[in-house]
Amino acid sequence: MSALAKNYNRRKIAFKRGKGSFLFSTNGKKYLDFVQGIAVNSLGHANSYLIRAINNQAKKVWHISNAFIIQEGEKLAKRLTQKTFADYVIFQNSGTEATEASIKVARRYFYSIGKPKKNIILCIKNSFHGRTIAAINASGSKKMQEGFGPKVSGFDHFKFGNLNSLKRSIKKNTAAIMVETIMGEGGIKVHSNIFLKKLRKICNQKKILLILDEVQCGIGRTGKFFAFEYAKVKPDIVPIAKGIGGGFPLGAVLMTKKVASGMIPGTHGTTNGGNPLAMSVGNAVLDQIFKKKFLKNLQKVSKYFHNELNKIKNDYPKLIKEVRGVGLLIGLQLFNDPTKFIKKLEDNKLLTIRSGENTIRILPPLNVKKSEITIAVKIIRKVCKKF
Image (cartoon, rainbow, N blue to C red):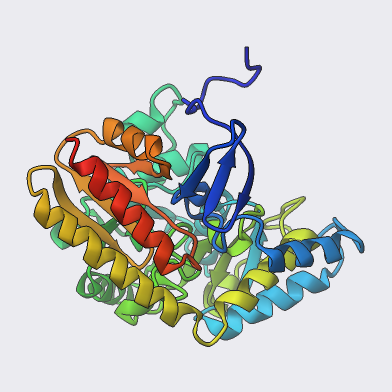
């Protein structure tokens, strides 16, 4: 009997090793892994470049307190700011820490300019920003909040894609609007570029901050380094995690100079955030993603994948409702509960994971091969024939 608490309904399968897009189970079976730790292993399993980076750093120093300068972190922060909208970075260990820190940054900014009552964060109803107490209240999901009362104040909500609902929800004390650029847990729901542009315009008009949560959709996942780049908007704050560590725990908050002005010494801290091991891996991930043809190739193979999935949808219109997503953040929405479909995919050696609105989440590594996508397409088509 497992000594682990039952907060996860784990599948009856375990793995002994992985390589690239594949996992090998303890009973010797080979699986095509299109979960990749839920968009975490951005460069696949046992990536040789990342292994060398972490091994080299492990021989030097693992952990240094943030009371001292951490050179590897200085390097990673500089690279992130040079390639993005941001002027400053605060490193964290995870996505939920990154979103929590984003909330603190937004509130602290208004406090620092003499507006302490301007502290409400406006989010999408039934979104996802993590599992901590503040994050589940930010998400506005009754299911996630159940049993964890009392309710934490400081968050308002509006309906996905509904500008009228958004405008009605903005108050004098609204400090920021925080949305996932693409909703991951909520069903791979994509905001249109027009919506994001209008969101930026509203924030400018109301003099509030725009937080775009790119924990799942960022770091090249959509074919751009950040998903919001397609809309050509500039946020004020962006939490990241998952793919930036390539499998090693790493998160961060990116922010403009203006909002970073409130974060003076003592306003935020982390024991392990920004440690040399994580920073070395993060730099190695950027080495690969910033290669000249990396994202162009990702766009090419993802276009092929979307096209093939839409062919399957057209062949099975009573089974598949919609192919969602951008790049390699893909959702296959069914008309009915996808549990049995996901199990059939697993039986045929393709690993996927569910999302909201009867959606199957498909998350290959960013360096997935076209031939591996072809294998996945064949398996999905085979399973469709059985339903």
